[in-house]
Image 1: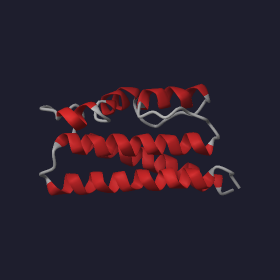
Image 2: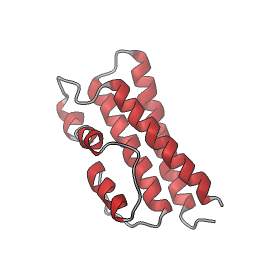
Image 3: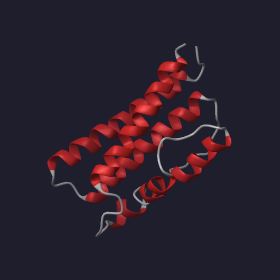
Length: 131
């Protein structure tokens, strides 16, 4: 049993709540794009951190998806998401949350696709950690 599984589960559940919020915002068809991007970024961040924790990787407190991506790569863990997409989602963490944004940096459907892809990846690794 993985000694980090409980902490990883907590991160995964937090990411899943962000993913649900993202899905509900998109379903309304009326949500501000920066809110959609924010929840996508948050979900992706928590799913990446889930995997880091499962592997016992220590990381500084950060919202930077690129730093997290590079940290996992240094530990030979591949992330199933394009670095360019993660870089674009980074902008939603803080900047657009407070300033708003007039254009879509990442399309709503791509925000959802990225979060779903990372959710499935993290979920599979959690299941593997049970062995």
